[in-house]
Image (cartoon, rainbow, N blue to C red; front, side, top):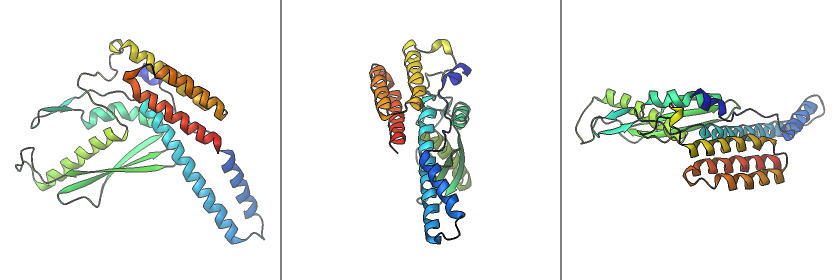
Length: 257
């Protein structure tokens, strides 16, 4: 597992964009000018807040792409006796996902929110990134104490607690678009990795590491064409193709500002 983590592309916070730096200098200059109009000062501060918020969200999106690139399928470790279905427990998901998402600057916190339908509980997850952006996810989970066949199987208090636990597990899985499969060892046995999977992951990681060095839009476009030809050959790994495409598109947006 450690070898996989070492190969994963890391997310770092780039230097402040020239646009933001210029605006900060303008604000500092205005603050030292006794004749500056207070309305102009407020507009500058509002503009700085909007640009900072936009930059933080772009960092969030780039980090999400990189984090998901390092997340493989997770093996199911629990069984629901009522439905006889297998699933990955919250502990299983957390054990495999936390080292990855924290390495890319994310932190998660859960809460209970308002607005859920009757006999449901709304579970919130605040996903915060080190760059300053926070995104809120939620899901509404039944908390009526009914079992799969409609019978009463638990008290209301127990049902709410169970619904919150259920919601946390599903949010954690859905936020990072994680697939669960009982026949997958989630990278615990390196010898069991399919040769093609190792090949495409290596190609993907190398391409992702080159994106920050694309200094012009033309260079980013050239990298995209190169990567599309390489990753397009692996039909079973379309998710990596899409993540690379999104990362290049984000880089091109940054270069055009």
